[in-house]
Image (cartoon, rainbow, N blue to C red; front, side):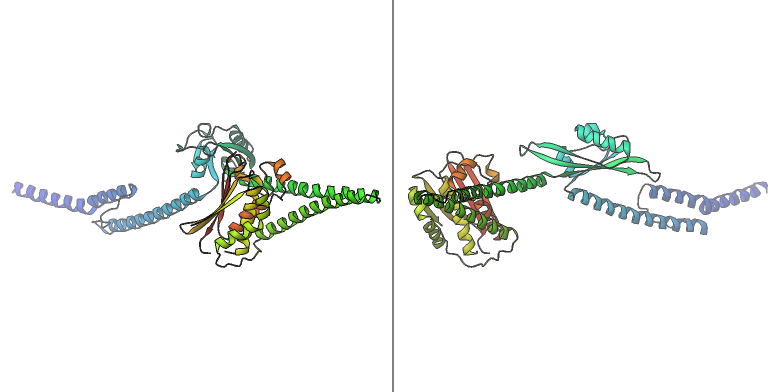
Length: 416
């Protein structure tokens, strides 16, 4: 009897243990497993939890938490992707450092500027940027908590040139107003500096080009006023000189006005089909006398606004004629190159140095200033050519070698 009673008690105990396990212990272990999966960012197969209502409610709560976590993760990933896109698209270099002068963020433009293929975030600033100007600027920004600016000249090994860079450092502050780091922008101002130099050169050149003939005219006018009894022979000589310089002034003013109209895009273009053979011959006829004087041979090879193209070829032939040696040759070519047509004028004259070649399309720029003024002209011809080409949706190119000659190309769409 006692054995039977003991067996019944054991069975009841076992049943109770199973019930307690299923209702209380197993659900909470399942919940513990769910929590671990959520913390590890794993997707649980199910959030259904056995046991009583309490454990089921906990399972549903965990499902809501996981869904919210996933949504936040997607939002953060989207923002991170957007931030990276912005950083990649930035033309300015970006550098962020903390108060310990350790790098926390850079963009691609910064790495390109300093020639750094990869940067370890958290690296000391001195290991990344070895420029005293940058180091001092950032240190001063962190020390004073104020925005700072400076300029830096960087050598570009690829182009064998120098780049002017403007540096702006802004402090990063916490809610208490304490400086916790700095954001530094590197803005390439090389083009701005070049534009400013071109502007200053333009003003100086215009002043010089106007002053010279005006001074000569004023001097001769004063001479005539002071000497009313000037002989007819001397008077004739003075008038011829005055006429020559007044024509030079007129050409200069005409070219300046043409250039101003082209740059303002106010010069309307009248597009039409152009017979290049006729156009070339027309330009050659304009220069027939000058070509004969220097015994220059003109060869035309033939494989838009006709008036403007005439002006382009006129200026190019004028340029080639001035710098060609006697008994030389000038070659005019027009060839199709895919969807483009290339007009070129080649001479075998004195040529242009590599240092001067990139600037020959600037206003008033002369590679050989003394020779150019001796030969006449306003110094605006190639600038006008460039702007006419751009108005037609084209571009200009030049290649030259000292002592061997120069080729100027105007590349235009074949069908405008």
